[in-house]
Structure formats: structure tokens, C-alpha cells
Length: 97
Image 1 (tube, rainbow, N blue to C red):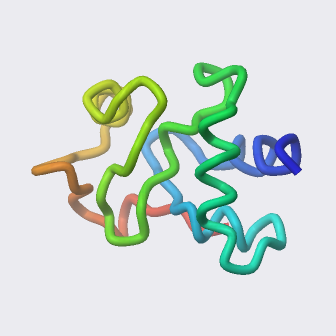
Image 2 (cartoon, rainbow, N blue to C red):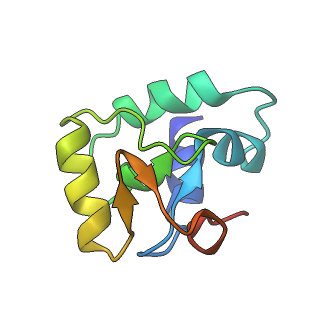
Image 3 (tube, rainbow, N blue to C red):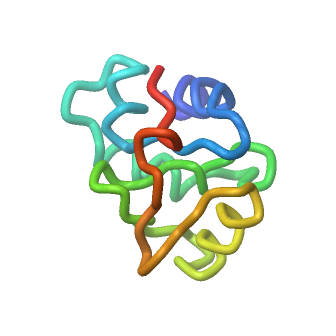
């Protein structure tokens, strides 16, 4: 399942994010948000497989293996506007499969 999720995540372009729930649905996991979080935590290639682009459905950044500060910096570097730990312009930024 991990490889299937990582392959699907590669479709999320730079400058966009998706949610744990959207990614779960995209690979056929109903209510699989927690499973997706666990898979993201096991990501062996975080630079290649962009797990930093997976966020909470309310627009909050969510966790990251290297910490929320690093995740925020990576997303900001890709052009995503973040304020108080939450993504701005949510509808323009979220990627839906």
C-alpha cells in the first residue's frame, strides 16, 4: 500500500497541497487519514516523495517527521502562503485527485 500512496502523491504539483483524506480516497482507503499519516511518516525519500504537501483538511499544516517548522519552510519555498500554521487561499492551493 505504501508504494501505491507514494506514487499517487507524486501527482501533487509543486505549489499545491492535498489532504490526508483526499489522498486516502484516491488510493481506495475509506476513512484512511490515519493510515496515510503513518505511511507519510515512513517515507524513505522525503525529498523525492513530497509528503510535506499532505496537510489537514482544515488547512492546518499538520505534522511532519522533521517538524512543523521545516514543513512550513518547504511549503513556503514552493510558493504556498501560510499564516499561523494554516494555508491561505485554501481553495486555490488544494489539489484534488
